[in-house]
Length: 354
Length: 178
Ligand SMILES: Cc1cc2nc3c(=O)[nH]c(=O)nc-3n(C[C@H](O)[C@H](O)[C@H](O)COP(=O)(O)OP(=O)(O)OC[C@H]3O[C@@H](n4cnc5c(N)ncnc54)[C@H](O)[C@@H]3O)c2cc1C
Ligand code: SF4
Image (cartoon, rainbow over all chains, first blue to last red; front, side, top):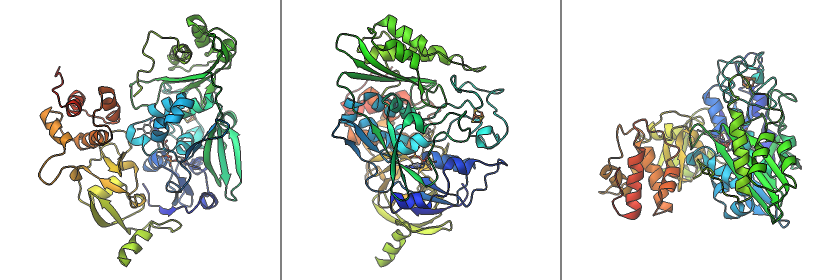
């Protein structure tokens, strides 16, 4: 890491007012040689930011540390049954939170499967949602790719086995956040605050952006804005959820494919409404609308679950090396739907679950 | 005392520190240690360098192998991904601080009994994760043990013996050795 100065923030608005760039802005260079010594960047747990700095992908002149700010890490039930999770809540606390395990099980399951216990003890939810992509060309200082301001995407002609199978024109990253898949299925919102303390709430679906909209960033976080919280809407009493993922290793790896399913069941085995979101499949958490439409009003059994799995693949455009993800996604959707509806599946539900 | 306060203030809220080295105070294994660090010095580097506590290993330096696991208060963390300057008043426990005056920590003894060490490079980190688990859960089952050590890479493949050692500590019985 290059030398940098250190400033623990005194308040969220102070941090927002000092930050000169988002990390994505600071990483965008014409030359591929980051000379961002003037940049002052926000640091939470530091797991992703220090990683980028160790690789020389960004060299900020100052880190503004928000990790010790008080009152930004609460997990609180709201009067309407929703939940507000402060941006500094760690993945470990989210995974172990008893009320969340009850109300929003797919989020606890996803948080428990992300990274390692050591990382989960440090990684904050805000930083997790804002982490930069894991595309290996993007993470390599030797590859000045489109997303960093270069002229080429190396993944299309190169090794794209871990890349997106949906909405992958131009740049084929998959969104790196495991919890985001579950949050998107719950239709969560992020709360953003500026230096004047003004707060706005944005649906996660609008916060994340596709490469077609903006190739150089994964979300609409603006310079001088802090992500302060994530809001989960209240769940209907009959809502059931399941997060499942599959990876090359059972533990401690970004998934090859993931799904979060939230089903509003009517008590007679029928599903009133379904929310199906695929992870590791697209540059954003990918809503499988055709699967949702197929499940709405349907009786949940193995046939409908399998049909939903196939419907979830509608519109897929796999690359030269990642078509293997399609059967993984279809199988995960089928299993997650059956498991959420509390219908036993033959296969183990969650191979990597702790 | 006034001196010590000044040193801690160097990293206090609102103040800009570095990039030049600055004095900080760390609470390591029950002792208060003063040292000079740059803001970019990781906790792992501070432990192994100025503090001379080389039991903590740095292998991948990216949070992937967990060889650098120490405790911040009661939490196992990858010390390569923590900056020394941000630790503040939190208690650091390293492998050197685990054993008592003249007896090993039970996890260390069990690792010896169950032959859970081969080349030993990942062992300090594994012991720290296992001891953290035992501290919050005196009778972990196999799944809980596997989750607790899931962040560790051991190229010698000691995992089954680590699990056996931990099962033995929880049950005080001899687990089946396959
Ligand atoms: C070995 C390993 C395995 C991993 N596996 C997984 C996995 O399976 N699934 C998964 O989801 N993740 C995984 N991760 C990634 C990890 O979860 C993220 O790096 C971590 O969550 C980032 O959070 P942080 O608090 O450390 O963020 P930081 O690194 O501090 O920040 C990340 C980015 O967000 C910005 N930022 C942070 N907080 C705020 C805020 N509140 N407001 C505005 N900007 C902010 C920073 O400027 C920075 O650009 C893994 C990481 C490692 C090292
Ligand atoms: S997929 Fe995106 S991040 Fe990866 S090389 Fe192509 S442009 Fe860069």
